[in-house]
Length: 308
Length: 214
Image 1 (cartoon, helix red, strand yellow):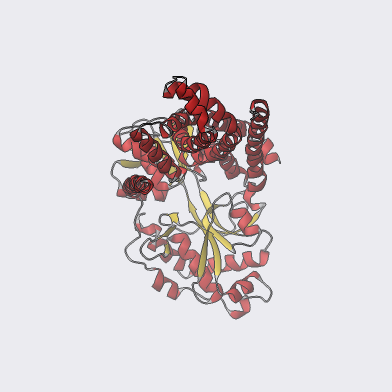
Image 2: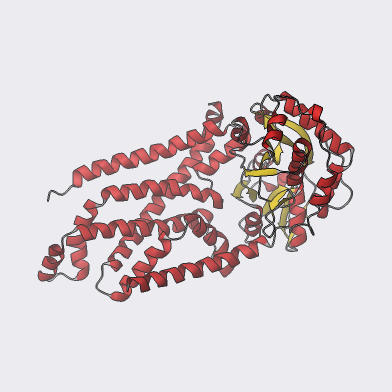
C-alpha cells in the first residue's frame, strides 16, 4: 500500500516535471541559437602563439603553460558571448572564443577550463587564484579596478531598451520613470537605470530567457539589456522590438589578478596582436556579427578607460 | 565597511521584504500544514491519501523549481499575481509539507490512550483533535517548528531569483555598484543570522514555558 502511494506521488512529480520542461522550452525559444556550425576551429587554427621569450620565467604565463590549461571565469548561459552548446558541450561565443585564443597564445593549444563565475564571485575568484582570467562582460569601473586588474578594454557595448510591439511612450531611458523595468540580475543595467530614471521600479530575473518571458507576460513595460542581446532576441521573437539607440557605453575588460602588471602587459600585447591581424574582427563576425549587421566595429583603444 | 553604510536604505528595504516574506509565508504554511496533518491522521482513507501525496510532492521538488514554475508557468494558463504574492504563496505551500510532517510526529507522540479516551467521552474527530491531541502535539514540536521557521527564513532568499527584491537581491544590487562582495554578503548574512537567532531565542522561551511534565 505504501509503495502504491509512493508510486502515485512519483507519477505526480514526474508530470509536474514534464510541464516544467515544456514551460522552459517556450521560454528558451527567445535565446539566439548557436550560429550555424562552430567556426571556432579554423579560427583558432589561425590564432597566434606567443614567442617562447615572452613567457617570462616565474610569471603567471609560465605557470599557466606548465599547467597546460587556462582557467577562465565565465558564463555558460550568455548567448553570443559565452553559451554552452547543449549538443556538443562546447562553450561558444565571443568571450569564449577570446578565452580559447588567449589559451592558445600562452600554451600553444586552445585548452581552457571555464569556471562558471558570477558577478558576486569574480573579484574573489581572481584574487584567490581560482581562475587566471575572467571573460564575462566584465565592465571596467574604477571601483572594481581597486580589487582586480583589467586588460583591455577588448570590447565596448551599450544598453538599450526593448518593449512589446505596439508599446507607446517609451523611447529613451528618461521615459522609464514610474514604469516597471525588467533587467537581468547582476547586470550593469541596474545601476544605469537607477541613475537615469530614479523613479523606475526594477524587477530582476536571473537569465535572459527569463527576462524575455517576463516582458512578454507583462511583468514589466520594458526590458533593459545589452543592445546586441536585445537585437538577437527581437529577431527571434517578432512580438518584441528594440527602441532607440544604446544609451550607455560599457567597456568590457579582461579581469586579471590585482597587481600582476607583468601578466596585464602580456595580455594587452596579445590583444594588440589579434586586433592587428584581424583575428579579433573575425571572432566578432563569428559570434556577435551573426546578429548585428555590418562590418566588425573598431575595437576600443586599450587602456582608454579609467580603471584599465 | 562603507560599502554597507552608504547603502543602508537599500539593505533596510530588502530586510523589510525578507521579513514580510518570512512572516506571511510562515503563517500560510502553518495553516496549510495544520490542515494537511489533520488529513493525514484522519479516519478517511481518501483524505489520508491526499495528505500523503501533498507532502511527498512538495518535499521532493526543489523550491526554486516551484518558484520559477509559478512565476513563468502559471501566466501561460492565465493565472498571474504580483511577484511578492506569488513567492509568499509558493513558499507557504512548500514549507507546509515540512510543517505537516513535524506536526504529524507530534501527533504520533501523543499516546494512543488519549485519543481513545477522547472518543470514549463522545468527542468527534475534530473535537478530539482540537481539544486533546493538537494542544499536546504542538507542545512537543515547538523546537522542530522553530527549525522550520529558520529554514524558511533562509529559503526566502530564493525569491531573489524571481524578481523579488529581498535582502539577498538588495545585497546583489549593492555589490554590483560597489564590487565589495565579502563585506556586503557577510553583512547580509549577519542580518539573516540575527533573524535566525531571534527565532531560536523565541522557540527556546516558548518551549520552556509550554513544556508538559509527563
